[in-house]
Length: 385
Ligand code: PMP
Ligand code: GLN
Image (tube, rainbow, N blue to C red):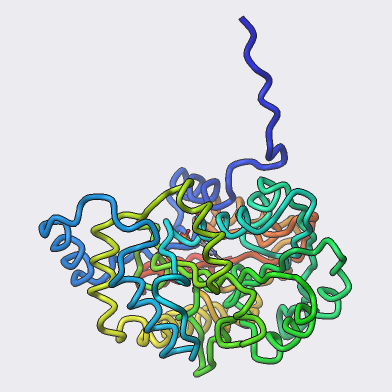
């Protein structure tokens, strides 16, 4: 008997850095500031709303694109916050988390040989999704200066070829914590305006923008919105990363193609949670209060880190804080993160893991979506280095 030779579609891919660092943190009893998830629970009212939906018998397949009340709540939120009216029936699709929204958008739009520009460092699922679609990832590196990371739009423009099918952006940005501003969106719009290039905008941290700044959603920008898949995730917004529910907003023609793939890779998404979230969304306070909630944690974390040997990078958005460690060690990032986890007992994520080309900047990422006591325990350990 011969076993068929499975020629990997993703030969360069191993276990994700988040899984590896969480396992290492558990092994060493470290405070886990690596993988991005809250260590506190979601609002009990949200759990009650989901339980009520189950008791009310919402336990069978929902409508393929998502239940009507949830699509209505999503469309109303986008219209209120970003001023763009997506059609509830034809332009909003509920997904099994942002990850499924991202791979589905890529699979429906990217054809074999198409090039997709990604901006490194970037979230780890983008490139494997592009490769699975038969596309070619074209990485453009962010610029790293004294004032942190920024997108070099000239380099993005220079990377465009007649084969460019899509540009993937992420704001607020994981792992760097930077945000795109209106001028960035204008620069992106100038690149794609007269070309058949789509935009995939990962906005899962849309409600984590600090210091009174505005989230520059691609849906707010007319030139970009007409060619964009905009992705978000309730996992981030409602402290429920394990629920894996998100959505994709896109113009009708793009949504129609998106749904052709969606209906055959998940068909539909968890019914009672959709009902629970739809009911909970009637009150906008939980997401409107999120910037203040996380800004307080960011400031607590930054203020104490400022007294350590780490150097802080700006953190305008997300629940991540990047730091330089050159005053502490000259180890490569992955080794430094392992050392920090096993010896200092605080887990972090090496930023090098988000680059497609080997890139060492001497920077690691901490997640501050943690109880104050968790942050204080980690800070006490980091202060001893
Ligand atoms: N995009 C980014 C930038 C992320 O950080 C994450 C992860 N948390 C995701 C997408 C995936 O979101 P989800 O858990 O909803 O699939
Ligand atoms: N988005 C989370 C992070 O950046 C991790 C998600 C995952 O583990 N795949 O840490």
